[in-house]
Amino acid sequence: MNFDQLGLIAPIARAVRQKGYAKPSPIQAKCIPVVLNGKDLMASAQTGTGKTAAFVLPILQLLSEGPRPSPKHIHALIVTPTRELAAQVQTNIVEYSAHLQLSNLVVFGGVNIRPQIRQLQRGVDILVATPGRLLDLQSQGAIHLDAVQILVLDEADRMLDMGFIHDIRRIQKLLPKQKQSLLFSATFSKEIRQLAKTMLQQPSEVDVAPRNSTVKTVRQRIHPVDKGRKPALLEYLIKENHWHQVLVFSRTKHGANKLVKLLLQANIRAVAIHGNKSQAARTRALADFKAGKVDVMVATDIAARGIDIAELPHVVNFDLPNVPEDYVHRIGRTGRAGAAGEAVSLVCADEIKQLRDIERVIHASLTREEIAGFEPQHVLPTSKQLAKSTQHKPGGDNVARMNRQRKNKTQRKRSARNRKPNAA
Ligand code: AMP
Image (cartoon, rainbow, N blue to C red; front, side):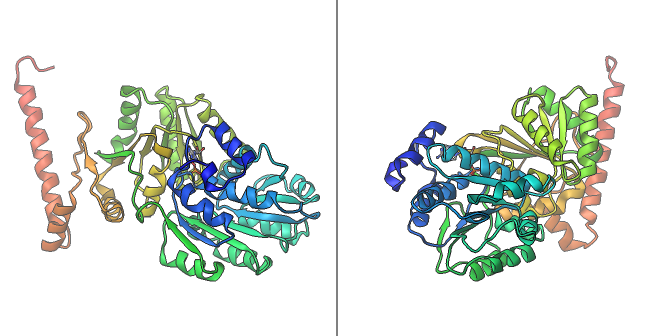
């Protein structure tokens, strides 16, 4: 199967060839014909599967056949949860429409609204927007949504997680009833299905990956370690393995800042990207990371959403996420479009609950590997041990006993070493 066989017109097939894509990814092969046929679509796809081209390419083709928009009007609307994802989608649109006469624009909050109002004045074929700024522009009369022919909700599950449901409903009400709607989501939860019911008409369903499965080309493992030793272990892994382009996830903004400080002190070039940083700082951080000017980018889940860096080799979970589906999103940043990647999680005993939830969601238990010199004092129980301990004593007494045993063993080892005449 190649791109021409999917029914794409020559200028689009040419742009795709120039991007260097040899053949469509599975999500593209399934979605492109459906969208070209004018049907509604509900697709399950994570970042890294080529999902952006799966909707952008056919939308470009459909719009290229119609008239240009009137002033302040748009013909296709792509709504994304984050600014980074919005910018990324627009970059793709620019590349794929290189040989077409279609206009595009991206609008999101955190930057001056005036230039956006000006650019909308003449009308735009394809608009990429985050929900809040879109509604702002609409309420100021800068944009009319009554000529929208195609709507895309990208990463719909994340939009719900971020509390955008009311904004989405408001946007829906402003759009014409007759239109084509496409919904992309990494997971199909009950809430997503409910949303789909209200916005899609007899949709085709495309599910290229089994639900909540993690991308297969990603090698995943966990390193059990005590909480306080995590920064030292991260430093060790980066230096020992000569890692460059490492994306590190931190659960909190404060944690991300603190970790960057420690890495810088250890002479590792690092930068943080999170919601408290200005849009300009986030864009600069991402550009520096992509250009190889920094080796480590420490990100929170929300900020990292939608970051697209081709073939990102290493993802590190410095903390495990509280929401197990975030694990799937996080490691979706590596091993993209067939390239092998590595996802490493530093897990301390406190995170056993998160680990158990993740293993349940991905239907697999993650390979554990203790690193010499970083063996934890507080043991990380296996799922089996945990089940046993909670069965016998709700307080988890077995875990406490295991911790005691391990402490004694380390102490015995230490005193044996000290007894040796040549001990260092
Ligand atoms: P996405 O899932 O849309 O974020 O795309 C992930 C990455 O895969 C991006 O870097 C795309 O440029 C790349 N990509 C998309 N489609 C293809 C394809 N058919 N062949 C190779 N790479 C692709």
